[in-house]
Each structure stands twice: as structure tokens, then as C-alpha cells.
Figure 1 (spheres, protein in one colour):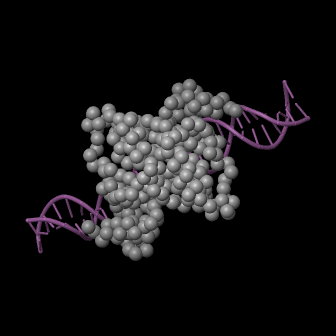
Figure 2 (cartoon, chains in turn purple, cyan, red, yellow):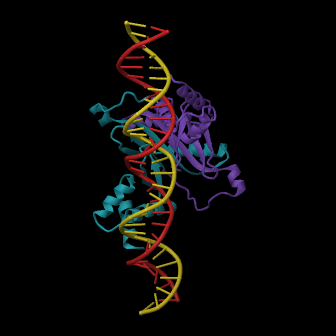
Figure 3 (cartoon, protein in one colour):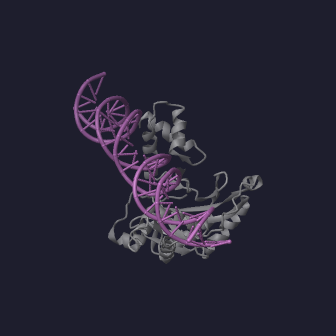
Length: 136
Length: 136
DNA sequence: GGTGAAAATGAAAATCGTTTTCATTTAGCT
DNA sequence: AGCTAAATGAAAACGATTTTCATTTTCACC
């Protein structure tokens, strides 16, 4: 356990939101100026590999890292301000587990994401009306 | 409506799986050798913009395009062979809609993805046991 | 407390999918 | 047919991710 790794791990698990490599890089850099970008990247990958986080893409080309808790949750993703709100997915996991079984899959994880606009963005009028109701 | 666009649209909507730009490019190219990559890319973006498809990322860095039907569905994604199986998500949309309302979001779409291993991959033993149960 | 092998780091470069640019062609309207 | 806006194709630009490699550090073992 190098001091760099310790700092990266600590910083990551203290976050209350999904960070990108750049974001975490800036954070650890404010504490230790000498840490390299690739070290941050490699350690985030490591955290994923050992199952403590997972990569999430919200469509803007930037990979973010979502700390995995024992509490199943999904994400509400605001198309306006890019805010991410987590919600409890207890009701959904059962359905998904059943679905996996029915399709002869072993379930190793899931992602549930709802895209939309939050109240603030609706109030600000930053709602792109060209967005169509979509269904995956 | 240019002939290139028509070919790209037709080809895309005939597909029964999610295609990447490269895949669709190869397909239309086997019919019209002169079509450019950027034309395929632009038309896929266009299809998304008008709400007939949506981009999906399954974590391998390649964006695929999922034709939108009126039938809500989720995806079972095999970590072994990368196969994607769709499943009906009727049971889940209600929960998600309710969740959106509770969080003051207007629901514009959703994604439900289950990662795991399909029966074939389990039989072939191509199951990476380092994969941990994960929960988003 | 040394010692050596394996692992981790930092800087830079490579990679590769995506996106833009721009000159040219084409479609669609009158 | 003539005009304008839109679409196309080739190439270049872009940018996040990933690899390379020389150097440093950790850690197990003596």
C-alpha cells in the first residue's frame, strides 16, 4: 500500500458522488501535487476490479466511478444540469433477478438509469423540448 | 432523402441487434462501397436525435445504437460473449415512473441493464470468477 | 537493518473511437 | 434549368483512455 494509493482510495471512498478520473485527480492533487494522472486512473480501475466500484457512462463521453454499496440503487440523471440522484432499487432487483433466471443468465450486477429533468432545470426552463420520450 | 441516408436507415432498422458505427459502416459498405464513415455516424446521430434510437454503452468503449420500440425493454448483457438479450420491462417502468415523480424528475427515458453470464458461456467455462457480485 | 524481486509510480507517448472541418456534390424547391 | 440549403466523403482534429518505460518504492525474507 503506497501513500499514493492510500490517498486515492481514501479520497474516492469519501466522495458522495460519482467522480471521473479528472475530478479525482484534481482532488488528490490538491493534497499531493506529485501524484500522476495514470496512477489515479490505474487505482480507479483497480477499485473496480476488486468489486468496490463500477464504471458508469452517462453519455457525455466521460467515465465516472460509482462506489458500490451493499444497497442496490439506480440513478436519476438530469439531462439539464447533469446532476445524479440515487434511488433505492430494492423493488427492482427482484424483478431483474427473476428475469435473469428466466433467460438462463447468472446475474453479476445491474444498472438502472432514468434520464429526465430535475425540478430546478424545469423551473429554469433549460428543458430541451426536442427530447423525445424514449424507451429502452 | 439521399440514397446514402436511405441505405443507412434501412440497414439500421433491419438489424435485430445493437450496432456500432463500425458495424453499420461495414454493412452499408458491402452494398455501397463509396459511403463514408462520417455519413454513417451522422445518420446514426440523426436517428437518435429524432427519437428512433438511443446510444447505449456497455463498458467496452464502443457506443452502440439501440432501436427504440414502443415496447419498454431492458438488456441482459453477457460478460462472456458480449451477447445482448432484450427483456420486457413492463413491470419496471411503473416503478421507475413513480421514482421519478417522487424525486421531482420528469422522466424522459430509462435504461435497465443486467450484466452476467449466459448459459453457453457458463458451459464453456468462460466465466471469469474474479467477477464479483455488484450492485449499482 | 540490509537485500532483492515484484509491484507501483509518473511522465510521456500511443491508441482509438468520436467529432469537426471543408471542399464538393446532391436534393428539393420554384 | 437554376438556386439554396442540406448532405456527403476524406482527412484532420480532438480528447479520454490506455500503454510504455525508466525509476522508485514496497514488502517478504534473510
